Length: 290
Image (tube, rainbow, N blue to C red; front, side, top):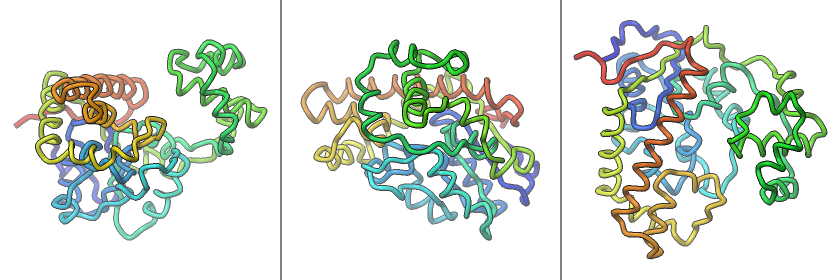
């Protein structure tokens, strides 16, 4: 268990880690021991509609400490890292020390390294991009942009293509003009939860069991009439699987198995990303020593 005496109560805290690794629990421990506001840095926990499946803090947790930027958007809203930065900025200067917690790496990069102020993509440009195959998107990019991208990641490739089409400049040119960060890593206590794989996989499965036991299927049933797989909120792991079950396409057991597998794969991607980008942060083993 992390020794909280090693956490400077005067500094903001940043907590990144894979799904189900105990980030929210650690944030709550720090807030109860030292004070502070727990600030969401998860791109799916910003939405209403899927509070259980997105693992938002419940009423009991919110009663123990102040929380911000959880469930503050309707399920059909669009939301970017730039939107999150604008929402988080006042909290950095507020009366309570921020404890920023989540698994969305782009949010932490935007906060601590700055974010290029790229204009929004027009819907008609995105519509064209959605219809193009991945290899066509890749072929349309300049060499420098291609060299810095995971060319198998369609979302990243299409984003670069959209920026180039909409602005006439490459995403690399925009990134070169990035403004200073709102909060540098040196001004904060940056933590990465580093769970053992077997321990985390067991927690992922147990957590989805709890979600089902506490009403996740009812949550999906309430959202079924609003279901649109194109929405950002629809990326919540378990949402598509439970909707498919409610539509008679798969059994509940199959939906559960698919959601657990998707969560484990997502956690693996988060761990890989953290190793490549957050090596200079303080790594906290999970589970910690007794």
